[in-house]
Image (cartoon, rainbow, N blue to C red; front, side, top):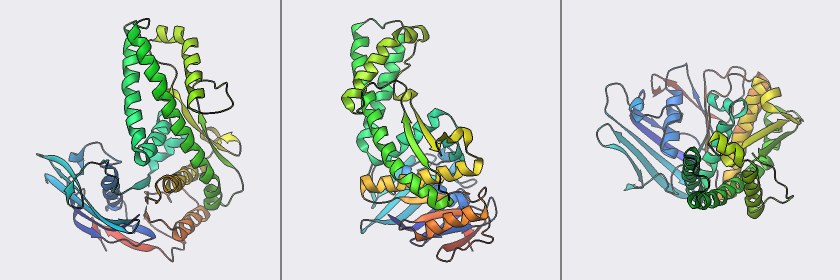
Length: 363
Protein backbone atom coordinates (compact mmCIF):
# COMPACT_ATOMS: atom_id res chain seq x y z
CA UNK A 1 0.00 0.00 0.00
CA UNK A 2 1.41 3.40 -1.02
CA UNK A 3 0.02 6.84 -0.27
CA UNK A 4 0.33 9.03 -3.36
CA UNK A 5 -1.24 12.24 -2.10
CA UNK A 6 -2.99 13.67 0.93
CA UNK A 7 -4.97 16.90 1.15
CA UNK A 8 -6.09 18.62 4.34
CA UNK A 9 -8.39 21.60 4.74
CA UNK A 10 -8.72 23.33 8.12
CA UNK A 11 -7.29 20.33 9.96
CA UNK A 12 -5.22 21.45 12.97
CA UNK A 13 -2.83 24.09 11.55
CA UNK A 14 -3.09 22.67 8.01
CA UNK A 15 -5.25 25.29 6.31
CA UNK A 16 -4.90 24.34 2.63
CA UNK A 17 -2.39 21.57 2.55
CA UNK A 18 -1.35 19.15 -0.22
CA UNK A 19 1.45 16.60 0.19
CA UNK A 20 2.78 14.16 -2.41
CA UNK A 21 5.18 11.76 -0.69
CA UNK A 22 7.69 9.39 -2.23
CA UNK A 23 7.14 5.62 -2.36
CA UNK A 24 9.80 4.80 0.26
CA UNK A 25 11.01 6.69 3.34
CA UNK A 26 9.56 10.19 3.74
CA UNK A 27 11.03 12.51 6.38
CA UNK A 28 9.05 15.47 7.71
CA UNK A 29 11.60 17.89 9.11
CA UNK A 30 11.04 21.00 11.21
CA UNK A 31 10.94 22.65 14.61
CA UNK A 32 8.38 21.70 17.24
CA UNK A 33 4.76 22.85 16.82
CA UNK A 34 5.07 23.43 13.06
CA UNK A 35 2.67 20.67 11.93
CA UNK A 36 4.81 17.58 11.35
CA UNK A 37 2.77 15.37 13.66
CA UNK A 38 -0.45 16.88 12.30
CA UNK A 39 0.41 15.37 8.91
CA UNK A 40 0.90 11.93 10.46
CA UNK A 41 -2.34 12.41 12.38
CA UNK A 42 -4.20 13.18 9.14
CA UNK A 43 -2.85 10.01 7.48
CA UNK A 44 -3.73 7.96 10.57
CA UNK A 45 -7.27 9.38 10.73
CA UNK A 46 -7.85 8.45 7.08
CA UNK A 47 -6.88 4.92 8.08
CA UNK A 48 -8.76 4.27 11.33
CA UNK A 49 -11.22 7.17 11.52
CA UNK A 50 -9.92 8.60 14.80
CA UNK A 51 -6.92 10.59 15.99
CA UNK A 52 -4.12 9.08 18.07
CA UNK A 53 -3.87 12.31 20.10
CA UNK A 54 -7.48 13.22 20.96
CA UNK A 55 -10.86 11.57 21.15
CA UNK A 56 -12.74 14.65 20.00
CA UNK A 57 -12.97 15.78 16.39
CA UNK A 58 -13.67 19.30 17.64
CA UNK A 59 -10.08 19.50 18.77
CA UNK A 60 -8.89 18.76 15.23
CA UNK A 61 -10.54 21.85 13.73
CA UNK A 62 -8.44 24.82 12.69
CA UNK A 63 -9.02 27.83 14.95
CA UNK A 64 -12.50 29.31 14.50
CA UNK A 65 -13.45 26.79 11.79
CA UNK A 66 -16.46 24.47 11.99
CA UNK A 67 -15.42 21.75 9.52
CA UNK A 68 -12.38 19.90 8.21
CA UNK A 69 -11.77 17.72 5.14
CA UNK A 70 -9.14 15.07 4.53
CA UNK A 71 -8.59 13.36 1.18
CA UNK A 72 -6.10 10.65 0.35
CA UNK A 73 -5.08 8.98 -2.89
CA UNK A 74 -3.34 5.64 -2.50
CA UNK A 75 -2.69 2.37 -4.28
CA UNK A 76 -3.07 -1.20 -3.07
CA UNK A 77 -2.42 -4.31 -5.13
CA UNK A 78 -2.22 -2.17 -8.29
CA UNK A 79 -5.58 -0.55 -7.61
CA UNK A 80 -5.93 3.22 -7.12
CA UNK A 81 -8.27 4.30 -4.35
CA UNK A 82 -9.51 7.66 -3.05
CA UNK A 83 -10.63 8.09 0.56
CA UNK A 84 -12.24 11.12 2.14
CA UNK A 85 -13.19 12.10 5.69
CA UNK A 86 -15.46 15.09 6.27
CA UNK A 87 -16.24 16.42 9.72
CA UNK A 88 -18.72 19.19 10.44
CA UNK A 89 -19.74 20.49 13.86
CA UNK A 90 -23.39 20.39 12.81
CA UNK A 91 -23.55 17.22 10.69
CA UNK A 92 -20.83 15.06 12.24
CA UNK A 93 -18.34 12.88 10.38
CA UNK A 94 -18.70 11.13 7.03
CA UNK A 95 -16.37 8.64 5.39
CA UNK A 96 -16.16 7.99 1.64
CA UNK A 97 -14.28 5.54 -0.57
CA UNK A 98 -14.14 6.41 -4.29
CA UNK A 99 -16.81 9.10 -3.75
CA UNK A 100 -19.30 6.66 -2.18
CA UNK A 101 -20.37 6.93 1.44
CA UNK A 102 -19.15 3.94 3.43
CA UNK A 103 -18.02 2.80 6.87
CA UNK A 104 -14.60 2.35 8.48
CA UNK A 105 -15.03 -1.38 8.04
CA UNK A 106 -14.54 -0.99 4.29
CA UNK A 107 -11.69 -3.35 3.24
CA UNK A 108 -10.43 -0.77 0.72
CA UNK A 109 -9.61 1.84 3.36
CA UNK A 110 -6.07 3.09 3.90
CA UNK A 111 -4.12 1.05 6.47
CA UNK A 112 -1.39 2.44 8.72
CA UNK A 113 0.83 1.28 11.57
CA UNK A 114 1.84 4.02 14.01
CA UNK A 115 4.74 4.51 16.38
CA UNK A 116 4.43 7.44 18.79
CA UNK A 117 6.27 8.24 22.04
CA UNK A 118 3.20 7.01 23.96
CA UNK A 119 3.86 3.51 22.63
CA UNK A 120 6.67 3.11 25.16
CA UNK A 121 3.87 2.19 27.55
CA UNK A 122 3.46 -0.95 25.47
CA UNK A 123 6.53 -2.26 27.30
CA UNK A 124 6.48 -0.52 30.67
CA UNK A 125 2.78 0.22 31.03
CA UNK A 126 -0.18 -1.77 32.30
CA UNK A 127 -1.31 -5.15 30.87
CA UNK A 128 -4.34 -3.34 29.46
CA UNK A 129 -2.08 -1.38 27.09
CA UNK A 130 -0.60 -4.59 25.73
CA UNK A 131 -4.02 -6.20 25.32
CA UNK A 132 -5.18 -3.12 23.42
CA UNK A 133 -2.14 -3.45 21.14
CA UNK A 134 -3.10 -7.01 20.21
CA UNK A 135 -6.81 -6.26 19.89
CA UNK A 136 -6.20 -3.22 17.66
CA UNK A 137 -4.05 -5.23 15.24
CA UNK A 138 -6.55 -8.07 15.05
CA UNK A 139 -9.55 -5.78 14.52
CA UNK A 140 -7.70 -4.11 11.63
CA UNK A 141 -6.79 -7.42 10.00
CA UNK A 142 -9.73 -9.73 10.77
CA UNK A 143 -13.34 -8.53 10.70
CA UNK A 144 -14.53 -11.61 12.61
CA UNK A 145 -12.22 -10.73 15.51
CA UNK A 146 -13.94 -7.37 15.89
CA UNK A 147 -17.27 -9.23 16.09
CA UNK A 148 -15.95 -11.79 18.60
CA UNK A 149 -14.34 -9.11 20.77
CA UNK A 150 -17.53 -7.05 20.88
CA UNK A 151 -19.50 -10.15 21.88
CA UNK A 152 -16.99 -11.00 24.59
CA UNK A 153 -17.15 -7.51 26.09
CA UNK A 154 -20.96 -7.68 26.21
CA UNK A 155 -20.98 -11.14 27.80
CA UNK A 156 -18.30 -10.14 30.31
CA UNK A 157 -20.44 -7.19 31.42
CA UNK A 158 -23.51 -9.42 31.83
CA UNK A 159 -21.54 -12.01 33.78
CA UNK A 160 -20.10 -9.37 36.11
CA UNK A 161 -23.56 -7.87 36.61
CA UNK A 162 -24.97 -11.23 37.68
CA UNK A 163 -22.03 -11.74 40.05
CA UNK A 164 -22.70 -8.34 41.63
CA UNK A 165 -26.38 -9.23 42.01
CA UNK A 166 -25.40 -12.60 43.53
CA UNK A 167 -27.29 -14.44 40.78
CA UNK A 168 -24.50 -16.92 40.08
CA UNK A 169 -26.60 -20.04 40.73
CA UNK A 170 -29.29 -19.22 38.18
CA UNK A 171 -29.92 -20.82 34.78
CA UNK A 172 -29.24 -17.47 33.12
CA UNK A 173 -25.76 -17.38 34.64
CA UNK A 174 -25.04 -20.93 33.43
CA UNK A 175 -26.04 -20.01 29.87
CA UNK A 176 -23.99 -16.81 29.93
CA UNK A 177 -20.99 -18.67 31.32
CA UNK A 178 -21.09 -21.17 28.46
CA UNK A 179 -21.13 -18.35 25.89
CA UNK A 180 -18.47 -16.51 27.89
CA UNK A 181 -16.07 -19.49 27.72
CA UNK A 182 -16.70 -20.01 24.00
CA UNK A 183 -15.96 -16.37 23.12
CA UNK A 184 -13.00 -16.19 25.49
CA UNK A 185 -11.37 -19.19 23.80
CA UNK A 186 -11.81 -17.61 20.37
CA UNK A 187 -10.23 -14.33 21.52
CA UNK A 188 -7.29 -16.05 23.20
CA UNK A 189 -6.55 -18.35 20.27
CA UNK A 190 -6.55 -15.43 17.81
CA UNK A 191 -4.18 -13.48 20.06
CA UNK A 192 -1.81 -16.43 20.47
CA UNK A 193 -1.67 -16.96 16.70
CA UNK A 194 -0.87 -13.27 16.24
CA UNK A 195 1.83 -13.42 18.93
CA UNK A 196 3.44 -16.35 17.14
CA UNK A 197 3.54 -14.35 13.90
CA UNK A 198 4.94 -11.25 15.61
CA UNK A 199 7.58 -13.36 17.33
CA UNK A 200 8.54 -14.86 13.96
CA UNK A 201 9.63 -11.44 12.68
CA UNK A 202 10.48 -9.29 15.72
CA UNK A 203 13.77 -10.96 16.74
CA UNK A 204 15.52 -10.54 13.38
CA UNK A 205 14.17 -6.99 12.97
CA UNK A 206 15.41 -6.06 16.44
CA UNK A 207 18.89 -7.33 15.66
CA UNK A 208 18.96 -5.43 12.38
CA UNK A 209 17.94 -2.06 13.83
CA UNK A 210 20.15 -2.35 16.93
CA UNK A 211 23.18 -4.30 15.64
CA UNK A 212 23.13 -6.52 18.73
CA UNK A 213 23.19 -10.31 18.88
CA UNK A 214 20.88 -10.68 21.87
CA UNK A 215 17.52 -12.40 21.64
CA UNK A 216 14.03 -10.92 21.62
CA UNK A 217 11.03 -13.14 22.31
CA UNK A 218 7.32 -12.44 22.60
CA UNK A 219 5.02 -14.68 24.60
CA UNK A 220 1.33 -14.64 25.49
CA UNK A 221 0.70 -14.80 29.23
CA UNK A 222 -2.52 -16.59 30.11
CA UNK A 223 -4.41 -15.68 33.26
CA UNK A 224 -4.96 -19.38 33.98
CA UNK A 225 -2.92 -22.62 33.73
CA UNK A 226 -3.17 -24.79 30.64
CA UNK A 227 -2.73 -28.47 31.49
CA UNK A 228 -2.67 -29.71 27.90
CA UNK A 229 0.54 -29.44 25.91
CA UNK A 230 -1.51 -28.47 22.86
CA UNK A 231 -3.06 -25.04 22.46
CA UNK A 232 -6.31 -25.25 20.54
CA UNK A 233 -9.89 -24.10 20.93
CA UNK A 234 -11.09 -27.15 22.88
CA UNK A 235 -8.07 -27.20 25.21
CA UNK A 236 -8.56 -23.53 26.02
CA UNK A 237 -12.26 -24.07 26.75
CA UNK A 238 -11.54 -26.95 29.12
CA UNK A 239 -8.81 -25.01 30.94
CA UNK A 240 -11.04 -21.94 31.26
CA UNK A 241 -13.94 -24.00 32.59
CA UNK A 242 -11.73 -25.72 35.14
CA UNK A 243 -10.14 -22.48 36.36
CA UNK A 244 -13.50 -20.72 36.63
CA UNK A 245 -14.78 -23.55 38.82
CA UNK A 246 -11.68 -23.31 41.02
CA UNK A 247 -12.03 -19.52 41.36
CA UNK A 248 -15.78 -19.46 41.82
CA UNK A 249 -15.53 -18.64 45.52
CA UNK A 250 -13.15 -15.74 44.82
CA UNK A 251 -15.35 -14.41 42.02
CA UNK A 252 -18.42 -14.55 44.25
CA UNK A 253 -16.55 -12.71 46.97
CA UNK A 254 -15.06 -10.04 44.65
CA UNK A 255 -18.17 -9.89 42.43
CA UNK A 256 -16.27 -9.90 39.13
CA UNK A 257 -14.78 -12.27 36.55
CA UNK A 258 -11.20 -13.20 37.43
CA UNK A 259 -10.35 -15.46 34.49
CA UNK A 260 -10.32 -14.75 30.76
CA UNK A 261 -8.64 -12.72 28.02
CA UNK A 262 -9.46 -9.49 29.86
CA UNK A 263 -6.89 -10.61 32.46
CA UNK A 264 -4.19 -11.92 30.09
CA UNK A 265 -0.93 -10.18 29.24
CA UNK A 266 1.87 -9.99 26.69
CA UNK A 267 5.45 -10.56 27.84
CA UNK A 268 8.47 -9.35 25.87
CA UNK A 269 11.82 -10.89 26.79
CA UNK A 270 15.20 -9.37 25.95
CA UNK A 271 18.03 -11.85 26.46
CA UNK A 272 15.71 -14.03 28.53
CA UNK A 273 14.65 -11.24 30.90
CA UNK A 274 11.33 -9.37 30.92
CA UNK A 275 11.99 -6.12 29.07
CA UNK A 276 9.73 -3.91 31.17
CA UNK A 277 11.91 -4.57 34.19
CA UNK A 278 15.40 -4.78 32.72
CA UNK A 279 15.53 -2.90 29.38
CA UNK A 280 16.73 0.71 29.32
CA UNK A 281 14.61 3.54 27.90
CA UNK A 282 16.47 3.40 24.59
CA UNK A 283 16.20 -0.39 24.43
CA UNK A 284 12.47 -0.21 25.15
CA UNK A 285 12.07 2.26 22.30
CA UNK A 286 13.90 -0.06 19.91
CA UNK A 287 11.82 -3.03 21.08
CA UNK A 288 8.57 -1.16 20.40
CA UNK A 289 9.79 -0.14 16.93
CA UNK A 290 10.68 -3.80 16.26
CA UNK A 291 7.18 -4.84 17.39
CA UNK A 292 5.58 -2.26 15.12
CA UNK A 293 7.70 -3.40 12.17
CA UNK A 294 6.76 -7.00 12.98
CA UNK A 295 3.14 -5.83 12.88
CA UNK A 296 3.70 -4.67 9.28
CA UNK A 297 5.03 -8.09 8.30
CA UNK A 298 2.20 -9.88 10.14
CA UNK A 299 -0.31 -7.71 8.30
CA UNK A 300 1.22 -8.70 4.98
CA UNK A 301 1.28 -12.39 5.90
CA UNK A 302 -2.43 -12.34 6.76
CA UNK A 303 -3.79 -9.74 4.31
CA UNK A 304 -1.33 -9.82 1.43
CA UNK A 305 0.00 -6.25 1.65
CA UNK A 306 1.88 -3.95 4.02
CA UNK A 307 0.29 -0.78 5.46
CA UNK A 308 2.12 2.55 5.50
CA UNK A 309 4.35 3.10 8.55
CA UNK A 310 4.12 6.29 10.63
CA UNK A 311 6.90 7.18 13.10
CA UNK A 312 6.52 10.26 15.28
CA UNK A 313 9.70 11.48 17.02
CA UNK A 314 11.28 8.04 17.12
CA UNK A 315 14.86 9.35 16.79
CA UNK A 316 14.93 11.67 19.80
CA UNK A 317 16.17 9.17 22.41
CA UNK A 318 18.32 6.95 20.18
CA UNK A 319 22.07 7.33 19.86
CA UNK A 320 23.61 8.10 16.46
CA UNK A 321 24.32 4.45 15.59
CA UNK A 322 20.75 3.34 16.35
CA UNK A 323 19.29 6.28 14.43
CA UNK A 324 21.35 5.39 11.39
CA UNK A 325 20.50 1.69 11.59
CA UNK A 326 16.79 2.48 11.74
CA UNK A 327 17.00 4.91 8.82
CA UNK A 328 18.97 2.36 6.79
CA UNK A 329 16.29 -0.25 7.45
CA UNK A 330 13.48 2.12 6.40
CA UNK A 331 15.33 3.32 3.30
CA UNK A 332 15.87 -0.26 2.12
CA UNK A 333 12.33 -1.45 2.93
CA UNK A 334 9.70 -2.14 0.29
CA UNK A 335 6.95 -0.46 2.30
CA UNK A 336 6.27 3.28 2.55
CA UNK A 337 7.12 5.12 5.75
CA UNK A 338 6.75 8.63 7.20
CA UNK A 339 9.08 9.88 9.93
CA UNK A 340 9.08 13.20 11.80
CA UNK A 341 12.23 14.77 13.21
CA UNK A 342 13.55 18.13 14.41
CA UNK A 343 16.94 17.55 12.75
CA UNK A 344 18.99 14.92 10.96
CA UNK A 345 22.47 15.90 12.11
CA UNK A 346 25.23 13.42 11.16
CA UNK A 347 22.76 10.94 9.64
CA UNK A 348 22.83 9.57 6.10
CA UNK A 349 19.37 9.80 4.52
CA UNK A 350 20.50 9.46 0.89
CA UNK A 351 17.39 7.80 -0.56
CA UNK A 352 14.75 9.44 1.63
CA UNK A 353 12.41 12.18 0.43
CA UNK A 354 12.75 15.10 2.85
CA UNK A 355 10.14 17.84 3.26
CA UNK A 356 10.51 20.76 5.68
CA UNK A 357 7.36 21.78 7.54
CA UNK A 358 6.85 25.32 8.85
CA UNK A 359 3.59 26.86 10.12
CA UNK A 360 1.56 24.09 8.52
CA UNK A 361 3.14 24.45 5.09
CA UNK A 362 5.79 22.54 3.15
CA UNK A 363 8.94 24.55 2.41
